Image: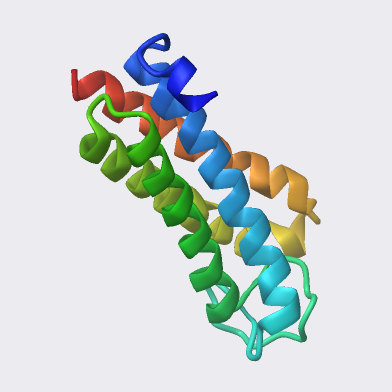
Length: 141
């Protein structure tokens, strides 16, 4: 399927789509791995320790496993869809990291006060990641 799509999508659309998938996978793996393997969760901006399962909490284990999932998906894109593989991979990874950071900041600041749901926080992080990817891919042409 990936080989069939190769060259049919514009560069910006290809990168934006892959970034969206990477951001969603990164956030989901980070959340689930943090619940299962997280030893010391904390709220991101404050650094305040919280119990496991607290909405908006971040653990190092979940963060690293989530980023590993995003890196794996970006590298698969580089291997299977050849147009500008390394430029595209670097744009995707930077955008996913920015999206994950912004999702953590959003969760830390708004989870307690507004009671934002995890899905809305994921939407903010994914939207920022796709926006950065779209901007960088249009500038890279």
